[in-house]
Amino acid sequence: MNGFGPNFRLKTIQDFSYLREGSQLLSSKWLRFYYKDSQNKSASTRIGFSVSKKVGSAGKRNRLKRLLREQFRTSDFRLLGKDILIVVSPRVYKDNEKISDAEQKVLESSYSLWSKLKKNESL
Image (cartoon, rainbow, N blue to C red):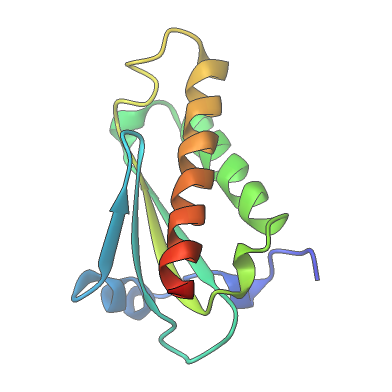
């Protein structure tokens, strides 16, 4: 399945609250991944996003979420059995002159963090 259906999303307050306590952290300059084993003991990885208004306009925030969601949707990271909260740094557009550079750096950071997460889980 290549979709991004409801079984791949963190949707409720309880889903996000579950990740607040005792979760592990992977971080880069642009992103932070908070993760734990899936709350519902599923083999599917569920993700949620936190993108502050400090990042930029609604269009910029939504674009970052769309890019990250698409990267996740087309990857093999969907079957890690984790709940993951992805937090985008407010500096992402401020520290990069071009919007395309900022978006590329976020995607590279995301892929790097996904790879680290997958490597950590296979140990």
